[in-house]
Image (cartoon, rainbow, N blue to C red; front, top):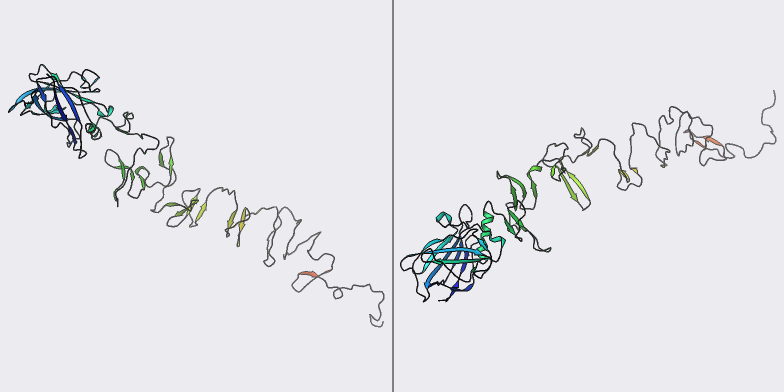
Length: 422
């Protein structure tokens, strides 16, 4: 005799501290008794060692007339299994892998409780099904009064979203991988997070208002931080602490560079103005080409240097490959195809101007120059062309004055120039 009853079930998950409303389904019973269930609870309980895989099932049994069974306490037998189809007789059984074993429960005034998967308290089958692999799963319930002849309740009951709280068991567990956004965990990954579209962010972490603790930590098995994002967003890598420089190895890993370490707590290169870097240390020194410096100069370069643009010394706007504003001192050999002194007031002095292998100075042009013991076979003086010369009291060569220093007309006769002959 068929009996139609209403089954209403709810789910509760204490791990998430939320209660998810369930759904109402209609069940046909093929037995002389029927489970009249005002409520059916599926509970995932939290334990200190993690989230156990136990479904707590509660219901009430009644006969076809609606009379509650069990009286003050009667033993009934149940079998539970999980399928991928709601229709009894169709689909594939997903759990358990073997034929489900029966378990007994005491029914009092129609009420009974079964902890499905609670093997530590006598349930025969371990609830090891991974609910994360299939979203459409259904619970099949079989009941018997003698443990031999079982009646199957129809249709099977859908296990709704809260039963997928088994995923929390994977997150807290030690063996079952968990995945979010996908049903296929990555190989050897305990937790897989996959974006569901090109516009979604796979993982976001947001700090609390006034966050003071680290936002993100990766630790080794001893609990020491390997990688940290602090409350200010700073990235800290323990393997790169106190590095004088950072580089990559052949595998692309960030490692400390091979340069000298040195000491001090304020070795800082700062990016500024979107186009350059500046050094900010105790002495603000920069050393290139060596591991130590013997001077306190701000810039020390050991070895050959190359500048492709103009270099200014004492000037911020060099117009030539080398522009020097101010005096310069050269203690070694200076080689140049020509020298051009442009000042009209400063004196240019060259000691040992000629090379040791030559005594001839060719194509030399000078303004306001002074030479000592100079001999020339062809000396040209600017602005003194086609005129007689003389020297002044300072020894400078100047033009002689016509009519004063020399005659401008020819002498045709001498009259009374000399005294009378004696």
